[in-house]
Image (cartoon, rainbow, N blue to C red; front, side, top):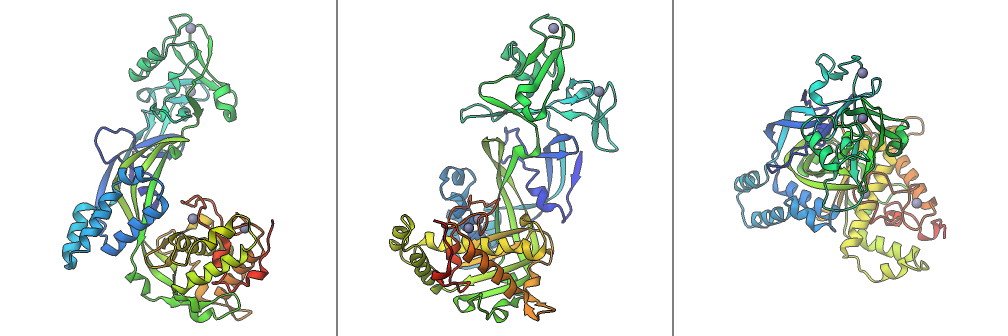
Length: 490
Ligand SMILES: [Zn+2]
Ligand SMILES: [Zn+2]
Ligand SMILES: [Zn+2]
Ligand SMILES: [Zn+2]
């Protein structure tokens, strides 16, 4: 089956159709279409996506802050080489020369055409009506609808569940269904799987174990049975190291890193500071705060994980997409960190644990900068669904420690218009929508009762940093909150 990407679904495509960077690895990105699970077979590389020195530095910083505690991953995905590359670039003055070197060492391509194939190394087909298992070559391909049909009853075929590893060992992260049948020899089951044959029944030594059903999809492992087609003995499925789950495309997850172009941001930008002289916002602590209709974000897939719970990480062939979208861009004055630290010390004055933490650092502390930028990014992102009616995952952010800045952007080409709202006036009250936006955020942050972050204020699902390095109080100076006005739960 061939999947052609368009600009619209390019974002999904780069995170879905992953191929390994090195030969000999057969696990590739998974893609679900209707009831079938496909694996990526080939990708036609499109044009090269140029990345300049500034974008590369933001990308590397971005990786480092997200995966700070995982040097093994940085090593595997080639981040060390990128640090070396940035060092060598700093000694070159010629711009074109720099661009050539980046292109040689860190080439990224856009995607055009992708070919997928049934995920035959993971699953088999089975007919829920006939309860029979089929290898790929027995299934009937319906090319018109891109589905597979049962050779006996012509109904649409499902894919079998897969086994996933439970604990970290050197074993494979997944295995196919029919290799863990209680009462049958594991080597024989593997041999049958590899030869694309149904295993022979260990009871009657005659029939084939090709009948499968599950009494309760919610309790897959306990309720699944394999049956002999001749003596009809039923076998349960069991493995010590693996558990059984439904096979989905979520068994592969892209490791994506984003960067953005700083010079593009200012084209037709709207200065939000001029509409935000309000009791809910302090623009004087910001060097910049703009709405940009021309943000250029670049998302690059560096690798992917394979499996569930326990996963294997694989370095990917580099593909990326550039996303022209709408964004909010905010850059702090260095003074912001002093104000934030002062605020944190004040609110945590009587806090048993944080009191010491914030007394022991100064305003140059990198963790403090991270806490501040990350919290502001979450704060802004958390309010965008409320004012736009869009889902939280319509938005993403990048924060940048070198430029003390936060970019919150819309995850669709051209954007959805949610950020643009902040540059407009509310018609009836004649009040800036940005003022309304930050008043609500201010209320949320002030009235929450958590110690630092929770799902009612600024913590959120899908945070790449697992909601670490966050504090609602880091937004205090930005939102003109009085440290004495905040609510507490403890
Ligand atoms: Zn059937
Ligand atoms: Zn039998
Ligand atoms: Zn909270
Ligand atoms: Zn986050």
